[in-house]
Length: 106
Image (tube, rainbow, N blue to C red):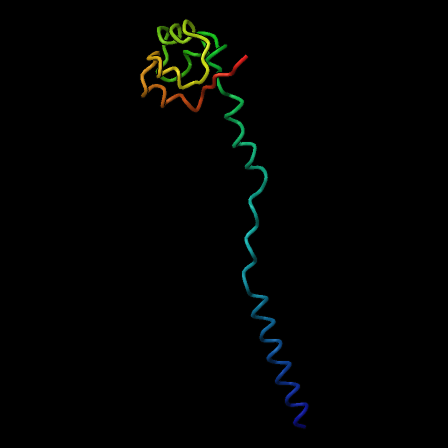
């Protein structure tokens, strides 16, 4: 009789532990790969300051006709930071557009 009582208590304890594990929260799922294309989308929209038209340059914040003419006149650029280093545009304007432009080399 003692053996059956011990077995019953052991079984009850085992079932109690199992139900505690069954109620544990599931681990978090990893991020979905669908978020990755959004990170690469801005790269496709970069404006090349060495080949962009006046109209394309004028779409940038702080770049009107006079500044787009100056950008075109002073081509080619080795790097996009030459726009403010050569005093073609103010540093504040460059800071606003630096993530939207690129200076590709031929």
